[in-house]
Image 1: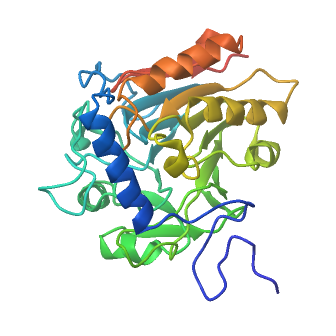
Image 2: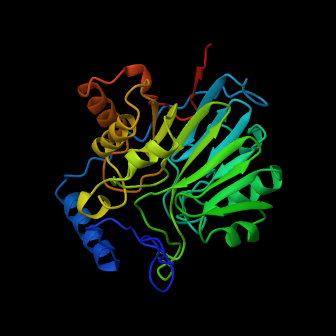
Length: 336
């Protein structure tokens, strides 16, 4: 049987779309040189590091069956309450997105509430193994405090999660799906890469996720560049009520364009998701992956401004853009 085209010959994984190029150490050196040059010329704008945070208003212990809530903890960490199901995406509560506590990207905005204040977690979704998405300290704490949670991870990550104390892990490939209780969780393609060192690039898979339960459908894109698969994802697993799309960590484009979406890419992906179901109202969109860690060169406050500008220019309904402050909770209720 021929392996899927995102499986690398000899083991590991790759992006299957034409034109993808794997970036290496020399590209990182070029990035550093260009950044230093811009700094010397005074061309770098950091942006405001004082970003708003509000009190979270999620439901404890669970939402009503007819209610969907979304609370942005920061970066790609979102608490989703799909009726009675509590879902957490790419959880990180640590001060740094790093293998060590004394170096690496420092959190610009503290978590809006302690990890101990989470409601009972039923499902945890992991998109890939980068330090800003798979945090050792947070995983250990969650595994101890929410022992009944079912963790979903792309291929290759189950052993790591079990070693860190997770009791139940479901490891899925792209287009696989699995049931947990009344929910159906599906693993879907993303355009990114994996690594936790210089020597393990591509050994584990990266992915997005969809969750369907109680008439609610949510899509968490994980960490991804734009790719041609968004329409197929919506066709197979939509129509969605809410989509979580990354809009940050995109400059310089020559380096980041193959792994991260900018706001313009995210709006194109959103349109692809909508086109698959033209006869239903468009989903709400929650922009993620910005404002919590300074990972790349764009000003930290630019992604939300650009996202709102593109959204407005496209004539999309303002109430469908859930552009949230850290800690903010939005909700929608299904009527009838």
